[in-house]
Length: 264
Ligand code: 6GU
Image 1 (cartoon, rainbow, N blue to C red):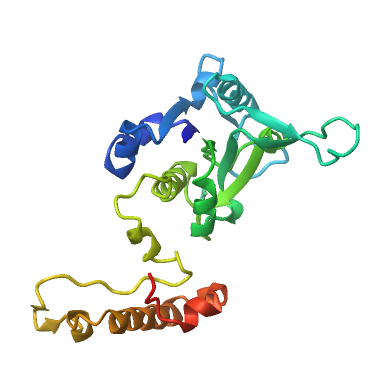
Image 2 (cartoon, rainbow, N blue to C red):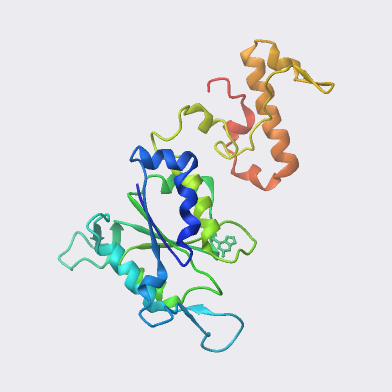
């Protein structure tokens, strides 16, 4: 997967060189390109923001630098080719300009759709993701409007709280998506058993020693009875989810909610 990041804080993404994702980059599974938005500003001060039309607090990111940088990414020979699909393929009318394939532009925004594990799984199959990190009060709306006719664009939010810019959200999304790219994790079972993969929160884990500060590991885990262990873990998942995140329960398939996961 190719990942392009456009930001006024390119140094921020030095962190991508370390950790799990650093390994993926070395092995060629993920290729990242970080672009300084200010390289698309041609005035002396490399200005990327201005006051909002209509008034109001804060500054808005100007469209021109985004146009320069995003155009350059799209015309890079290494970028995924964009297909233009037609909704009217059966007749002779020309393609109606709905972009398919090619890069997906992700604009982190508290006004976007909620990022979820399901979305991370979807994004893990993309050829190329472009993250447009906005700062201040956002990016001139015409950037999204323009590029929506040239590629697929999604506004994505991490959750219902406000960050100063898209950088932290971008790193979170890259980490969530990157670890799902086939070939990334040593033990594929560790992906299946964790929080959110079956719609439930994960069960509690224990390791040696069997007693620590008067706290015993639940005896069932030492029993060697794999059926009983599966049942217990599943009960723990349901109990935890019911207590901490009851909002998740309607998303759980009846199968998952009712049955111990003995076959995993
Ligand atoms: Cl994606 N961006 C910003 N600026 N704030 C957020 C967010 C994203 N998700 C939650 N808060």
